Every structure is written in C-alpha cells, then in structure tokens.
Image (cartoon, rainbow over all chains, first blue to last red; front, side):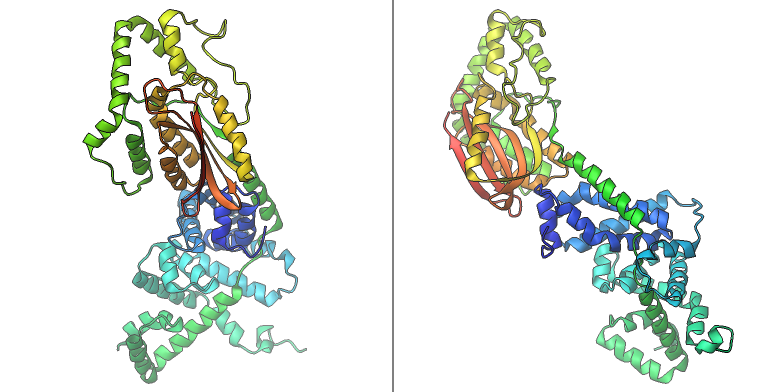
Length: 198
Length: 326
C-alpha cells in the first residue's frame, strides 16, 4: 500500500473493497489511538481493549465517512466517543496496575528513554488520569497532539468557548498537582539526588 | 482587568488563542501583576512537562492482538453478503418513481423532481391495463392463484443467488421437492418466478474490473430467472432495492453511492430489476457495479434484457453502462 495516499484515499479504497487499505490505516493510526486510549483509560490493559474497540468501530462505520471534515477529525471524534462509552461502562471497576510497570510496558522499544524522562512521564500520566473525563481528552488533544482549539471543538463537539474554559481548568489543576515535580526539576542536580558527592 | 479574569485567559494566552483585544488587555495586566506573571510561568512549565511526556509506545502484545482482531473482522466484512427475501413484497405499483422515492427516503437524499401524476398514468396506461386484465383473469380462477401465492412464499425461503454459481436448480417443479404444480396454477407460477434468483446480492470485492469482464457478468445475468416477465419487476423491485441497501449497510459499504447507482440503473428503457451490486474497482476507480434484468414496457414481456451500470463511489457519476436488449 502506497504511503503517499491520504487518509481519505485509503478509506475510500477500503470501502471500495481494496485489500490492504484498512490495514494501512491501522498502521498509520494505531500508535496515536493507543495513546489516546491510554491517557483516557489510565492503564495499559484497558487501553489495548479500547484501541481494538475503536478500530473495529471504524471498520463498521468506514462507509459513513462523508468528507464533511478531515478523516482524522472524524476518526478522533469517533475514538473519543468510544473512550467515553467504554469508561462509562466500566465506571467504578477496580484496575490494579502498577503505573511504573504499566508505563514501561510500552517502552521496551525505546532504550534511549532516560530514567528521568520516564519518571516525568509517569507523574504526568498519573496527574492526567486524575482529571475529569472531559478535561482529560482536551489535554491529550491539545498538549500531546497539538490540535488547534477549533479542531478540538469539532472533535469533541464542544463550543469553542467551552474548550477554552475547560482546558484552562484542566491545566490549572495539573499545574497544582505537578508542583512538586516542577520544583524538583528546577532544583540543581546535586540537590535532586540527595546531595551525594560525586 | 482583574486577576480572576486574567487567570481564566492564561491557558488560551499560551496557545495564542486569544483575540487581539483580549491579548492586549491581558498583557497590560501582566505588566502590573507579579502574581499573575508567576502563575503564567507555572502554567507554561506545566504545559511543557505534559508535552515532554509525549507518546508512549504501544506494547507489542497489544499490537499483535489488534492486528488479529482487525484481520478477523475484515474476513467477516469481506465475506459475500447474501440474504433471503424477508421483506413483504409490495403490491403492484408503477415501478421506478416509487422505488426511486424509497431510495431517496432511505438515504435522506433530496427528492428528485417527478412528472405529474397524470403523466405517470399515461406513461403506464398500457401496463396498468395489462395488469388489470391479468387480475381479472386471476379472479376467475381464484383457487389456483392462491396455490401459486403459497408456492411463491416457499420459493422466497430458498438460498439467494450467488454470482458465479452456475446451473442453479429450478425450484417448484422438481419431483419430491414441495408441492407439485398442476393446471392453471403451474402456468401462473412459471410466469411469476425468478428461478435461480431468490434475492439480490451485495458484495464488497477487491477485484479490479475492466470493460471486457463485464460481458461475463451480463452472460451470467442472462441465465437467471428464465420465464420471468416485467410483472415480476413490479412485484419485486422495491423489496430487492430495500434489501440491497440493507445488505450494503450491514457490510459497511457506501450505501449512499449504491443508492445513487441503483437510481440510475433502474432507469432503463423498460422496467428493471436490480439483481446484484459489487463494490470494487473499475478501471482504477472505486465503483459500484450494478447488474439489472429488464424487459420491454408491455404486459407479459419477458425479462430477458440485461444491463450493467458502473457508478463511481467517489462522486456517484456514471462511469460506464452497457445494455443488452430483451
């Protein structure tokens, strides 16, 4: 499958019955969709199930894509709704997972990832997981994927003003929760490791 | 600007999502307020931290499980969709306007301009007169017609025609298979039945078609429904169209494009019955390939005409069509 094909071309080819087109979409989107699922669900096990749910739903609904928005926006909207449904269905369910082990589960392919980076990643992930569901998706879409506010509004179906205010609240809450980490990172290195002599 | 208002705008300020006026007012406040400046700095650090956390790798086991689940589902989707006729067969009615309306309603398309009712009546007056004559004749032979109707219901439960399936066994006349027809009922049944075609088919195929291959499809269509007449179109068209759209929905194909294609396909010179639709590639373009059987617009005309219509899935334009006269 040619890599130069746009998402829209790939999905049209899949709908037309071309073998390999849907698989190409999966390869292109599995990482970002897994990440969205992981940040929303908060643990790797649910994220894997959720990622499957999202792609199977895409498979069933591919023919409904009408080019009224970009495929990416349409797909993320479906994915975000899928996350909400999944988390509502599983509300109150206990998930026993070690966040450090969970975070490292996907990192086996990246040995260059320093310990410090992983610690930051784990703390940020924990802080995001504690946000209300609707704020969580906004932080992921804006701060991890860099979407414009207007695009986020289209994906989530929220009004632009609501996106602004909810994202502001989410970031202020994260700012509060991540204060110890920020202070730790600001401090000189010799203070961070307990002032040991080198 | 007060601090409360300023803090509500800090996040959008960082992202450059404020209007010029809001940004200027906030800039003015930040020059004067050290507390808000500190908050802005903290917020910037936090946003930087979140961004630095970036993406995590998808675990290999999750990737494998996803690939397997998708592969399994794709096999189901690509399996040929066939079905039996389960819809209630509508009574006799002018065929194409009503069906076109059904397609439009089903797909939420804007209605097409239709000729006034008196023109429809004039257009179909020979066919209506012929149908009335058949009804009159049937009334005189009430009992045999009832037998024929029961047999037709049985036929609807038989497996659907699959393109490529040759030599479909004619039903209803085989010894030892259901009731045997006799007398006038047998003649009535042979005029109503579409032997070897219990229902339409809809398929998503990865095949690349070229024009020359479409002849083979027309040949196949020609062999179906020996003995069928244009009255069968009146009786079955709505049910077939409805079924095709439902099947397309079920397999996740582009139902809207199929609906447009069917609308064009049933607009043949005479009454037409769509019998199969294949979503495939035609000369490099994604398209619906729709096969119809059609006959001349006079009572009792045999349904021996065939036609293939190739309708683009991208812009719903007719890419190719070929008709064989009855």
